[in-house]
Image (cartoon, rainbow, N blue to C red; front, side, top):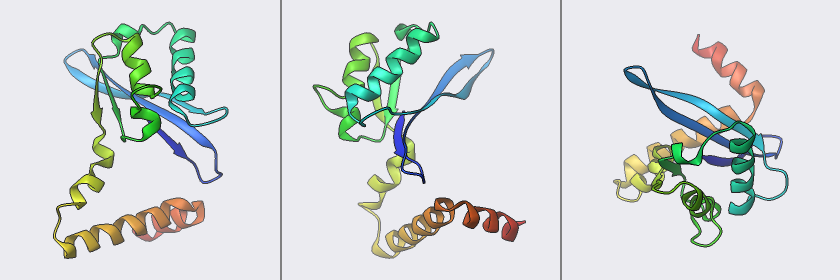
Length: 141
């Protein structure tokens, strides 16, 4: 689960679900919705809870929530994870693998940290503008 701002400045909540299917696990985009007002844990949880209710999804099916560790997600009183755990008994939480590069950079040698930081900056520049993204795809192919 991640809350992010798109290039137009719209706050969006994205939830990817992993579930067992036949002999393996599948991943699908469960939810990608704009947040109506603020990006607080209460608003994030409210959007998710409404989606679950509208689609008849049981909270008991939620066993682990992964987030980036932002306060809106992890706050002990009003964070989205706290509210999720109140609904989904036995649910646990983890720090998302997508954001672990920040944690890993803390113990990296300076020259590797610099290369990784420059790489992230270049990727963010390419992805931040649709024209850059299109030109990059043409260049790669």
